[in-house]
Length: 135
Image (tube, rainbow, N blue to C red):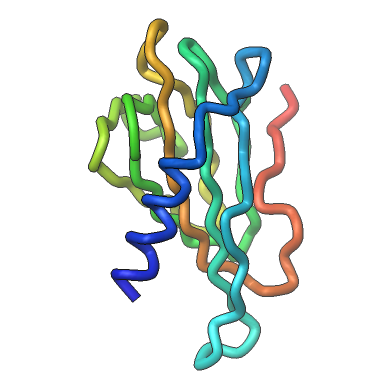
Protein backbone atom coordinates (compact mmCIF):
# COMPACT_ATOMS: atom_id res chain seq x y z
CA UNK A 1 0.00 0.00 0.00
CA UNK A 2 2.89 2.40 0.79
CA UNK A 3 4.28 1.87 -2.71
CA UNK A 4 0.90 2.62 -4.29
CA UNK A 5 0.42 5.82 -2.25
CA UNK A 6 4.01 6.87 -2.97
CA UNK A 7 3.54 6.30 -6.70
CA UNK A 8 0.25 8.23 -6.69
CA UNK A 9 1.84 11.10 -4.77
CA UNK A 10 4.80 11.18 -7.15
CA UNK A 11 2.51 11.11 -10.18
CA UNK A 12 0.45 13.95 -8.70
CA UNK A 13 3.59 15.96 -7.98
CA UNK A 14 4.81 15.49 -11.54
CA UNK A 15 1.44 16.35 -13.04
CA UNK A 16 2.55 19.92 -13.66
CA UNK A 17 1.83 23.44 -12.48
CA UNK A 18 -1.75 23.88 -13.72
CA UNK A 19 -2.88 26.35 -11.06
CA UNK A 20 -6.09 28.31 -10.67
CA UNK A 21 -6.03 31.73 -12.31
CA UNK A 22 -7.15 33.51 -9.11
CA UNK A 23 -6.05 33.05 -5.49
CA UNK A 24 -8.20 29.97 -4.94
CA UNK A 25 -6.84 26.45 -4.79
CA UNK A 26 -7.01 24.03 -7.70
CA UNK A 27 -8.30 20.69 -6.40
CA UNK A 28 -7.97 17.52 -8.48
CA UNK A 29 -9.45 14.16 -7.48
CA UNK A 30 -6.54 11.71 -7.83
CA UNK A 31 -8.32 8.52 -6.84
CA UNK A 32 -11.56 7.15 -5.38
CA UNK A 33 -11.55 3.49 -4.33
CA UNK A 34 -13.92 1.53 -2.09
CA UNK A 35 -12.09 -0.24 0.75
CA UNK A 36 -12.91 -3.92 0.12
CA UNK A 37 -12.58 -5.07 3.74
CA UNK A 38 -14.49 -2.09 5.19
CA UNK A 39 -17.94 -2.05 3.55
CA UNK A 40 -19.36 1.42 3.02
CA UNK A 41 -15.98 3.19 3.26
CA UNK A 42 -13.71 4.53 0.52
CA UNK A 43 -10.27 6.06 0.15
CA UNK A 44 -10.45 9.28 -1.81
CA UNK A 45 -7.44 11.48 -2.47
CA UNK A 46 -7.04 14.98 -3.83
CA UNK A 47 -4.13 17.06 -5.00
CA UNK A 48 -4.51 20.67 -3.84
CA UNK A 49 -2.40 23.24 -5.69
CA UNK A 50 -1.94 26.80 -4.49
CA UNK A 51 -0.49 29.61 -6.57
CA UNK A 52 1.79 32.00 -4.68
CA UNK A 53 -0.42 33.72 -2.09
CA UNK A 54 -3.28 31.30 -2.87
CA UNK A 55 -5.76 30.05 -0.32
CA UNK A 56 -8.99 28.15 0.24
CA UNK A 57 -11.96 29.73 1.98
CA UNK A 58 -12.86 28.36 5.41
CA UNK A 59 -14.57 25.00 4.99
CA UNK A 60 -15.65 21.71 6.47
CA UNK A 61 -15.29 18.27 4.97
CA UNK A 62 -17.69 15.37 4.57
CA UNK A 63 -19.07 14.51 8.02
CA UNK A 64 -17.56 11.00 7.93
CA UNK A 65 -14.13 12.10 6.69
CA UNK A 66 -10.89 11.29 8.47
CA UNK A 67 -8.15 13.09 6.55
CA UNK A 68 -4.39 13.00 6.48
CA UNK A 69 -2.71 15.70 4.43
CA UNK A 70 0.93 15.82 3.36
CA UNK A 71 2.69 18.86 1.92
CA UNK A 72 4.42 17.84 -1.32
CA UNK A 73 5.91 21.18 -2.31
CA UNK A 74 6.34 24.58 -0.67
CA UNK A 75 4.55 25.37 2.57
CA UNK A 76 0.93 25.29 3.72
CA UNK A 77 -0.51 27.38 6.54
CA UNK A 78 -3.41 25.63 8.27
CA UNK A 79 -5.77 26.07 11.20
CA UNK A 80 -8.18 23.32 12.22
CA UNK A 81 -11.01 24.31 14.58
CA UNK A 82 -9.67 26.74 17.20
CA UNK A 83 -6.18 25.21 17.17
CA UNK A 84 -3.03 27.15 16.42
CA UNK A 85 -2.28 28.51 12.97
CA UNK A 86 0.59 26.28 11.85
CA UNK A 87 2.80 26.30 8.76
CA UNK A 88 3.81 22.90 7.39
CA UNK A 89 6.63 22.39 4.89
CA UNK A 90 7.31 19.72 2.27
CA UNK A 91 7.21 16.27 3.84
CA UNK A 92 5.17 17.30 6.90
CA UNK A 93 1.64 16.03 7.53
CA UNK A 94 -1.42 16.85 9.60
CA UNK A 95 -4.80 15.23 10.20
CA UNK A 96 -8.41 16.33 10.38
CA UNK A 97 -11.09 14.40 12.26
CA UNK A 98 -14.75 13.97 11.27
CA UNK A 99 -16.61 17.23 11.90
CA UNK A 100 -13.51 19.44 12.05
CA UNK A 101 -13.66 22.99 10.68
CA UNK A 102 -10.73 24.06 8.49
CA UNK A 103 -10.57 27.78 9.24
CA UNK A 104 -7.27 28.52 7.44
CA UNK A 105 -5.79 26.69 4.45
CA UNK A 106 -3.33 28.75 2.44
CA UNK A 107 -0.01 28.80 0.67
CA UNK A 108 2.60 29.85 3.22
CA UNK A 109 4.46 31.80 0.52
CA UNK A 110 3.58 34.86 -1.55
CA UNK A 111 6.24 33.98 -4.15
CA UNK A 112 6.34 30.16 -4.53
CA UNK A 113 3.60 27.64 -5.39
CA UNK A 114 2.58 24.90 -2.94
CA UNK A 115 1.05 21.41 -3.29
CA UNK A 116 -0.79 19.31 -0.76
CA UNK A 117 -1.88 15.66 -1.08
CA UNK A 118 -4.91 14.81 1.08
CA UNK A 119 -6.22 11.28 1.64
CA UNK A 120 -9.78 10.87 2.93
CA UNK A 121 -11.24 7.79 4.60
CA UNK A 122 -14.90 8.55 4.05
CA UNK A 123 -18.32 7.00 3.65
CA UNK A 124 -18.54 5.78 0.05
CA UNK A 125 -21.88 7.59 -0.33
CA UNK A 126 -20.29 11.00 0.36
CA UNK A 127 -20.06 12.92 -2.90
CA UNK A 128 -19.03 16.36 -1.63
CA UNK A 129 -15.65 16.28 0.11
CA UNK A 130 -15.53 20.02 0.90
CA UNK A 131 -18.24 22.52 1.86
CA UNK A 132 -17.45 26.25 2.19
CA UNK A 133 -18.37 27.97 5.45
CA UNK A 134 -20.41 31.04 4.62
CA UNK A 135 -19.97 33.94 6.98
